[in-house]
Image (cartoon, rainbow, N blue to C red; front, side, top):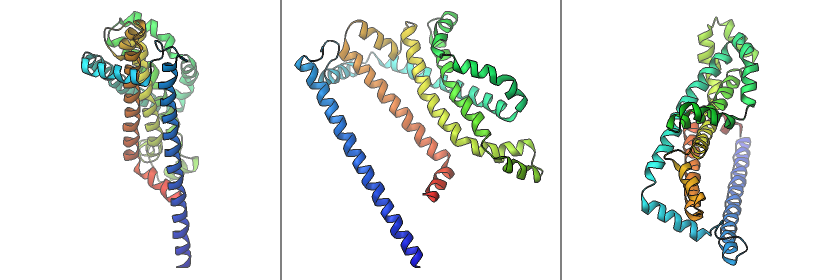
Length: 277
């Protein structure tokens, strides 16, 4: 009983420390944001920064209002998001497939790994002119560029995740006459799921980045990247920053959605962390 009471008190102290740390982080983050927005508003107004190139917060909010009221950008938003989702789906499917093949077949892994390392080291953006030239300025080139960028983290994380079980775990499963399929389903796959989901989350942001870059480089007929390029060429910086604000909001939303899905999918990992803490 005494030990239990001591554990409860210790746990209570830890929770209070965590709560205090969280509160402090929120306060520091809020103060930092307020100071940043204040400087952003004041410095261009005072002429310290060129207001034509760096509009104030109020100018940006005005641009965002004009963007929303105008309504002409919804087609661009839909084009970007649909391309992101398609590219992410293809990239994840291809990455998981490649990761499973290389993660479960030592022969294939040995044969392909040198080429995979060389391809991974290549800056993917240099493929953009080639893909645009081959596929044109339509959504196909945007999707292809995004897939080329986003499938690598899923591929690598899948391959690494499947190799996480120790040799002792494999030996134990084989002692129970487990088949290769059973080894994959009951040992490798559960170990790989958390790290694969991290790769999928990373791939979501990379696919978003790839689509935006493709829209800017390819002079696409629609898309948020096209809007950023057009407004910046016109030196309409309030609208440029308004579109960038939309892009930032979408990126944060996508990461938040993937975080929720990750916690739901790997609930056993969350429970294990709770026990250890």
